[in-house]
Length: 356
Ligand SMILES: Nc1ncnc2c1ncn2[C@@H]1O[C@H](COP(=O)(O)OP(=O)(O)OP(=O)(O)O)[C@@H](O)[C@H]1O
Ligand SMILES: [Mg+2]
Image (cartoon, rainbow, N blue to C red; front, side, top):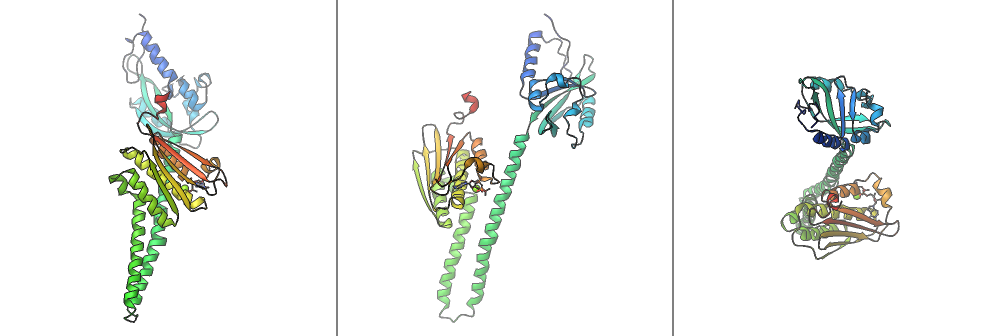
């Protein structure tokens, strides 16, 4: 049996590895979705798999023999000398996040791991780099941070513009009490009691929006029902809430996800539809849970909306994606809007991997 004289990334002697295994390993490398690049000690590209072609756009024969620095954008600090210094010391670099440049000049954010390649006497002769495109992940996490900041700004606005203004007014009314004739004081006090109860109820509603203890202790149906009631009262709209065959126990991540989808869709309906009656339905089937929120208002073009600056639709999609759920929007200008979110109840039933 023929064997190859070859040493692994950490100096492991691979000469005893039978050729058929080496062929399999080579195929794994070649067809890996990750970009796998071999380079010599001067950074000249020696190997280039299909993942690298996919990620950077170059075919192997366009880059083999060329310096790996051709992947570094001109405005990004050349980190290559430091990487090679570590490699020469026999060290590896794990999940280093940086920016690279494709053949078309497009910037890609990548996570790179690099390890030394040794020859048969253990001398470091090059490096193997594995890179993964993290552009989308980075974009999503930036959007998520932006969404969090917007949410904080909204709460701050509500606390400042609404609650604190009303409390300040309340303080003025208290101040005026001492100048009132004594027979008017009981009436004024009753008015003030009503005001403070209203403020209290709005603070409670705000805090329930942030964290629903109903959701935690009583489950999705009471939490959604309570939210719809508070929302209706607060926004001065009507919300009809109905349920059908909702299974008794739904995991907390699915419940929280659908609860957030309900909040965003109702906020959107109140903000954008122009009408003040909304219908919400939570419905269970044998393997899925469905949430539908509809209005008969202004409607919109979903494709254009996704490209808008709003974060609501995007963050709903992302949240649903995490629990393998999906959202569909049925809306046309002037024809109302129905938002339908559905999530598989068994963790594996919606998995694209399982389906393929
Ligand atoms: N029920 C609805 N009726 C009419 N238009 C809607 C409705 N829901 C969403 N839209 C449209 O879709 C757009 C995108 O919604 P999205 O929730 O992503 O952003 P937003 O509500 O404008 O901002 P944000 O949610 O970040 O505060 C809205 O700007 C609006 O034009
Ligand atoms: Mg919105």
